Image (cartoon, rainbow, N blue to C red; front, side, top):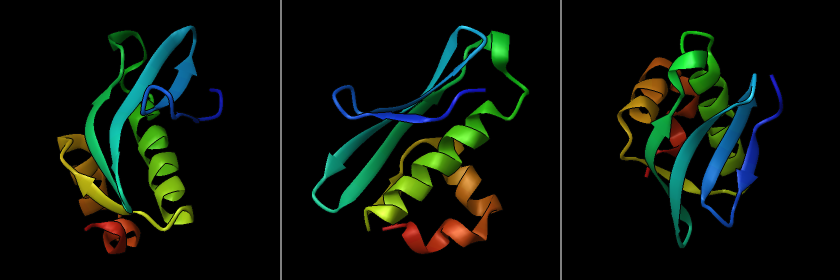
Length: 90
């Protein structure tokens, strides 16, 4: 598994696995980052790809002192399961 990359031009965090690209789309709004959706191709589902992607995205938000708006159900669920990220929620 490669490293998660913040593709700011496309406003997506990306992770390539076995030639497939998973992504977490976002929109920057001032000091907030709104996660709109997460997509993992079926070929790489069930391998923790989305969790790795979202953990890196939330760590990046923390590093940039951004507040998180989890519109995406997966991101919201991840934050519920990982209380160490709850302080980021706007």
